[in-house]
Image 1 (cartoon, rainbow, N blue to C red):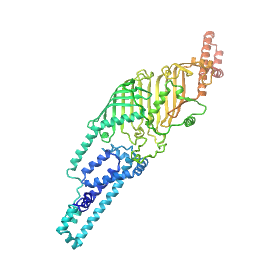
Image 2 (image 1 turned 90 degrees about the vertical axis):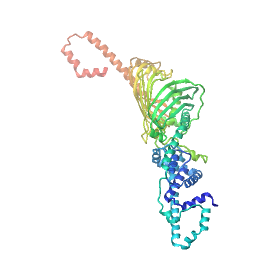
Image 3 (image 1 turned 45 degrees about the vertical axis):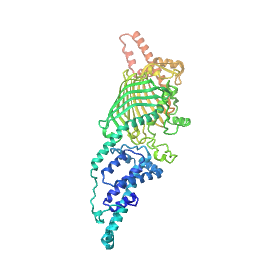
Image 4 (image 1 turned 30 degrees about the vertical axis):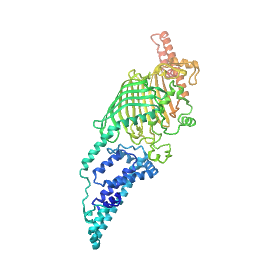
Length: 609
């Protein structure tokens, strides 16, 4: 057998009894396997199909190698095909993501999504070509055997058959048998072997994947947080769907000696079918051992945050605030009013990776890879589908560091690693034992304006809220409650929120004039002010939003309150005089005058209703 082994296999394929259909399938599956970089769930599924179907394994391996070489040589093409799939054919990702085992694929890489389309297309074309060549060869062979007596006599000679076996190997008895052979689609024993292989793949993936998933989660959370996020342990059970996380600690990026939040234990039950897709979907998550602002055993490390887009310049920020603020409103930076303004801005930056773009279409142009191999590893800014989803997280008896809430029950719904792809509202409910209640929902389902925020709050203590405001603010709240609604949009580019608040049982003071009023008038108003409706706006980029309010409107409302209080006081004094001086029996002529419309109108104009 002097010919190279691979050449002998190809010649034997042409003259053997392998069906042209199965040969074509082997070529198609091999190229599909090879054109997708890395090794993911879809590769495992293709291996299961290889074992299950009666396709020539050698031909599959040959085409797989050719496919890997083609992926490396055509990396830029594969990258741009991936861009096309994401922009024009996103349903292709959705279809593959719903297939067990294949769903456990990293669709965040452009080259991988490109391989989802290029693999079956190129593999199918080459498969058809190979199947056609085999069929033409065998028909030509049969024609020579049937119509050429010399050819038939020549191939029956012993030295020819010996030389044929020596150079090439075994072949079918004759051409007719290659064409009449029945196609056995399923390999003998392949079904059992495929099941065994599938179980082994799942077992190995979950035996080793727990630590890999734990490290991946820790890395992604650290990038989003800007400092170390520790995950003590992670357990996943593919048979029962049990999920457990212990020792979760989120470091404070401004103080690496302390953790912002520590979670002792998190337990849930995952959907087993979703686990087969490489997704962690939990109906209800129970969390215990929650603590805030705790000392770390060892200092954390700063982690470079992934930049979604270029930072907004100060000029651009001012322009955005000007465009979104009604004319005549007073505007000042949000941190100018907050005692912990810097921390508030840092928190806004931390949630930025999970916020949507301001429109469904990406505003930022996708950056082209700078190095050749980057075409195979370049990732999307946001995941095309969610890998982790907690439908409901319940945290009971949580001691919040905020004085307003204190001990509270917190419920989170639809918390995921890709809310923009999931298109379900992220919901938050905080019920304090002291009374305050906050409900908020961030929506991602509007294709034109994602990131819509709708919230409501009740029974907020204004005196406690004052602790979070700067001590040099002009207005100081001493008591009262605030309730109201919040509506607007929160995206990666910034915020645009309108707050409608109703203040009741109000007691406040100011050392100087407010909203265009002099100091004396302001003090007189605050003495009698007990309720007020206020409209505020928070606008601008996440890095520096501004607070805006209509000072003129507030001034008019406060003056109206003063007039109303004066009218009530005057009416009260007049009533006292009338009760003291008028006789018990009012004469008819005086009664008629008092009941006349002219007198009523005059009194209403003077004292109000």
